[in-house]
Length: 474
Image (cartoon, rainbow, N blue to C red):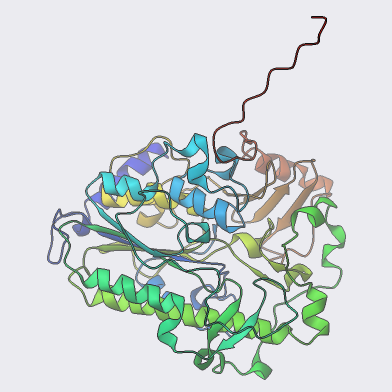
């Protein structure tokens, strides 16, 4: 594998985009456009996840690059997933498992070089807008130029379902589309693409939708007739063969129950709203791709598109992400670069953790030994290349899922297990963990479980233990 990786990287770095060419950045290195989408599961056209989805622009990017059809996040929740991508470390290593603390406040990570800082240290102008880290925060000095930062809610948004708590609202919004945050972020990014720079650029754009609340422009929402919306498949009693610990670990704060959606007649409208958000975000992706293709950078830009994790819309009788099942971990993931394979699909299990080391290879930057992801250079050269690594997802300390091309194996901190054969059971309706004949499969998959399971990270300086007070007679 090491020899193959070396050969593949050398071949990649010999591509025309790694040399000065017409429209090239001043230093001859390729530009990078990183597109992050929040809570987007496989409901995109090129992945065939839902019959009512429409994503012509994401599909266009897939036709111009490599689509990883078995890609998975490293955590099924925003902060640890995004931390893993930008810092290049597994949650089980960093200890960042939940939406707090922010990684740049964790003492053990303060000296770790993020992806953006590594590009900046090697001659790149780094720019960002939208949501790249959780809550739209940024490590101090992480990017050279910072555009608009979206909040969790916009003042223009009108609450549509009064009895829902927090962010769990959905439906169309009627204000001017230029004021929708994702469109504003795309507009700012297009200005940067069209600007004159004296360095190659690393531009990270984070779209907030289809994150809750599922708010889309009314124009897009009305394109999807409610009566024609297909609901995701569910199975009665699907959770009956699950370990008890699952009920503890898959709780989504403030999320309505599935019964609320079904009995209140809200399920179709919520799915419709999610699909509308997907379509609206795809439009913004299209604007970015049009800007790149119409600019001098068209022949010299690497484009990476991914979602931070998936999302449940009734499957397994639940909503949100926060679980180690396929719907929460599988994500759209595309890499497109000039002179690279186009319209290629790769079914090998891959991780978002690989983005950092792969971009290092594609852009010819110095390697960083601390990164835990594997470069995808061999698969970019040959999507059917030998690939022994599974994809790992972690949700809380010592709870992990191992995903291969065929199986998903889950082990929880107290030892309970789940096992699914995705070839025969793509919806993960039947837990096979108790079958004795599959014990060798479980044993083989368990070899990939992380051996390091850090305690949950804390922000700030470590607490000092106070010395015990001496008793009066001592």
